[in-house]
Length: 136
Image 1: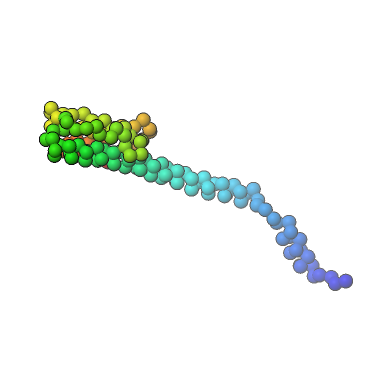
Image 2: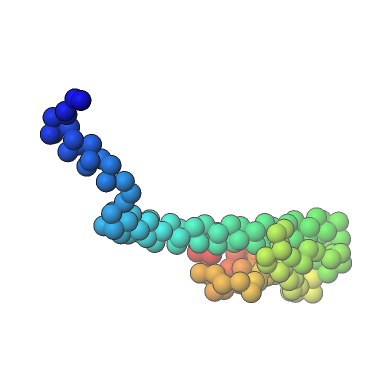
């Protein structure tokens, strides 16, 4: 029978008992995940809000385009057929109010979902956007 030197027996026993994670390693891993999540979640929420707002922009521009096509034919916005009442993804509802006996209009996009932009998005016949330029 062959006898192993003492240092080999010690190394073999040590590697056999060190499987798994220590509590400290798990706490550090959870802390790192928490820090990354605290950075990533607000960024993702801003991204989603921006994409929703883009949906409102698309809906307003689509409605304005239909109104302008109608105006070139009829020379008034009052005789235009119905415009879309919602944005392409259906997140915003679009409403039309005519001004100056059909010589102008204001389109308004509103939603019931929470957003950093509390105001409704508007677009008029002159292409003026309002009321908050940061929302556009």
